[in-house]
Every structure is written in C-alpha cells, then in structure tokens.
Image 1: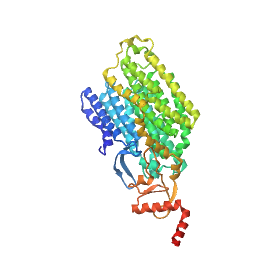
Image 2: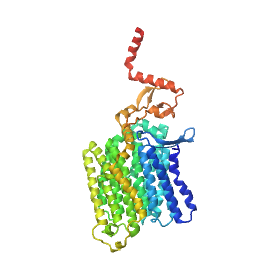
Image 3: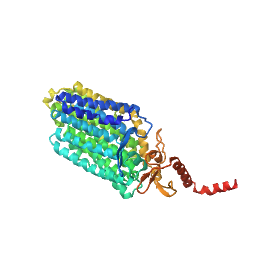
Image 4: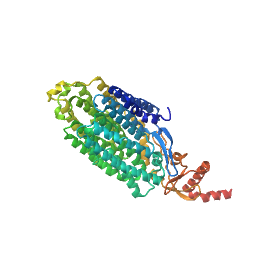
Length: 581
C-alpha cells in the first residue's frame, strides 16, 4: 500500500471538482460525482484489512516537512488510529450514499451542489486523518463553508436563517480552537497531536490548562452539540437537503466527539477529570431534554433532529465516564448513530420527494401503499431505539454500564432516555405508517424504486452486523481506548513531571510516560516516540525540544541518572563493596 494512500483518498474528490464545471449534461455531472465518491470509498475499504488492530499508534502515515522557518516548523502529516479509521471509512461511505440519494432530489444548480458536496468530503476526511493541529484546523474550516452553502442554497424555506446560525455557532467555536492552538504552539513548541498526547500539557499552569481545555471543549461541544449549545442543530437539520442531513448526522456531529477523544482527554487529562462530572450532567440533561422535545414535534425531520441531541448525549456521557465500558460504548455509539439516524433522514427525504411535506399529520396508513418503504423505516427506527440484535443496543448498553459505575443516579436517569426514545420513535412510526389512511392523496404514492432500495440495503447490513457481531468493529477501538484511559490515569499524570538530570548533569524537569500495556499493544514511552524528531529531553518551562548530539551516549546517561534517582541510598553500599574487593 503506497505511503501516500491517505492523501490520495482525501483529495480524490478534487478530481470531480475539476471535471464537473466543464460538463454540460446534468446526468454526466451526477455520474461524475457518484463515481468520485465511490472511488474514495472503494480505496478506503482496504485500509480496514491492512490495519494492525493490536496497535494503538498512527498507521498509514504520510509525513513530510511542509513549512520550515526559523521559528516555525510544520509538517504535512496524516495518519489513522482505530477510532479515526472507522470514522474515516464511514465518511467515505456516507458521502457515496448522499451523492446517490441526491440523484432526483436536487433539481437546481446541480453542478454547484455536487462541487460543494465534494469539497465538504475533502474537509471531513481531512479532519479525521490530520495528525497535527494546524492541518486539523485547516480542514475543520474547509468543511464549514460548503456545509453552510448546502443548507443556505438547497435547503427549505428558512434555509438562510439556518445556514447563518450554523455558520455563526461553528465559527465561534473555531475562533476558540484557533486561540488554543496558537497558545499550545507557543508554550510547547509543537503542534503534532501524537507528541502532545504523549507528553500531555499538565506542565502548564492550572489556570492556563483550564482555559485551553475550555477553548477546545466548547468548540467541540458546539459541534456535537452538547446541551445547551444545541439550538443550531434542529434548524440546520430541518432546512438542509437530504444529503446535508445525512452528512450532518452521520459524520459531522462526530467531529465534536472525535475532538474530545483526540484532544481534550489526552492533552488535558487532569482538567478532563475535574470537569467530567459537569459534562456528564449536561450529557444526561441532553439525553432527557432531547427526548422530551422530540415527543412534541409535528415535523418528522425535526423529531429526528432532536433525537440526535438525545443520542449524542450517550456518546459524551460514555466518554466522560473514563471507564473502559463507557468510552468503548461512546465510540461505538458514534458509529451507530451515523448509520441509524443517517438512514432515518434518508427515508424522510425519500418520502418528502413524493409528497413535499414533512408533517406527521399528513401521513398515516401509508404502510399499505408503500410496504417496502415501511419495512426499511421500521428497521431504521428499531435500530435507533436500541433493539437487541441491532447496532443501537451495543453502544447504549456499554455507556450505561460505564455510567452506573461512576454515578448511579446519572446512570439511571440516562437509562430512562432509552425508554423515552422508544416512546417518541414508536409514536412516530404508528402515526406515520400504520392505522387508517388519513390522506387520500397518499393512495397515489409510489413505493421505493431499485435505486433507493440499493442505497438502503448496505445500511441495513451495517445495522445487523454491528448488532450481531460488534467485536469486528470494537477490535479497532480497543487499543485506542486503553491509551486514552492510561493517559488520564494517576500513574501517567504523575510520571509526566518527574525531576531528573539532563545530559549536562544539571537538574531539569523531563516529561516521561511509562510503557503502559494495552490489549496486545504496548504504548511507546515518551522518549521512544520523540526519538528521531526532537531527541530525548523536553526542557521546561518552554518545553522546547533539544536534540541529543550523541544519541548512544545520551541514552546511557539517561539510564545512569534514572538508576541514581531510583536507588539513591544504594550508592554508598556499592562503593564499600568495591573498596572491600
């Protein structure tokens, strides 16, 4: 597999962006977009088989020096661990599905729509593959404008309001993130995510740590969204075209939870532990609040949008438990929500193309008219509820198990969210599909065609695959889960700020992390990870890395200093033994 495979996948949609403006026929535009998104997905699938599931390190790394100045060194650096890999492949899959679903839905400015969709794919793929903060921020911003255009140009009646609201919320979070990145680079001298995750930022003053944690956490909380920063989501979902809703629910909201996993916990483990209960409380409020508001919705799409607020509360709740079950459940729930809710939005879009209404009251009894649609809709609904044997059950069960270990009260309240989800989704299904036919115009509805069935079948396969054999997905996540938990462990935090002696014999503060064991994977020590980039020592307070001139000699000196620090009382005895001999 070529070293540049990630770059090829990420930028392959550019092929469509370049070709589409020169095409005259609308059908050719659609086929080009479909082919390019399919190409990205097909190339990404082999990554699942080539990935070493026992390793927690970044794989498929593509890295070279990008910018080099006297005070600025930036690398072009892509790489995937288990968490990023699953989200990366899911992104490529859902963009292909979205392109296919837009075949008849989009009827105006078709060229511009597919160009925006492909640019958005580049941004989202780049976010999950970026291995340094600058690249992450560049792709984070790149996805903002295409998504705002999808909502504002091809959305519903209130599309401009929804697009502006989405833009303002996301930009506010981006400004906070940018400030945090600049401060981290000034203080730590690096923006490499793996290095910052290894050394942690516990060396900074407590006040600065809290500020940086909040800067990143608020940015990601807006994107998830965490209650009470959720108000942009229902408007964006309701007004967005079908493809926009699928991408928004399927992968873009996961960028927020991914940010918590990738940055907040490894960078600021101490502060994360201090704030975990507050975030858990907000997550539980979001679970219950989203469910209650969903119950009173008259618009089917808005109901599913509020269900996203509730379901994503389970993701953040699981991550903040800092238990193996909770974190694993939160990560699995990210994948589950992308599949289940993405499928629900697809089906609402399919029926909307036929009736041009999303009001629940305008339907009723249509299962008799469109039985194939009814079967697929019930499957998507039951998976979202969390029926055992389907994907939703695994994630929610693990999250609740982890939450009950930490706080029984919060765990029980969160557990009621599963009950409320069953209430509003079963109520939606009853009024939407079953009963007497309330609208005679629906007698003329056509059932799903072959294209629509072909779009939905892969999602049904994923629903049952995740529900029946979740280990096939969890094996990618297990090493990364252990690494994140170890980074926030008391042992790791204590080891990060040990007093030792440097190569010149003077006492310095060296950042050091032990080699903690994971599920078949060994997390490399701090020295091993930085070896070859900045040498063995990270000098405080500015944390500027100084390369060792004589690597072998420095390594031997490190051993001597460590043995002296760990056995200071044994030195006189050793000298006496030598004299006697």
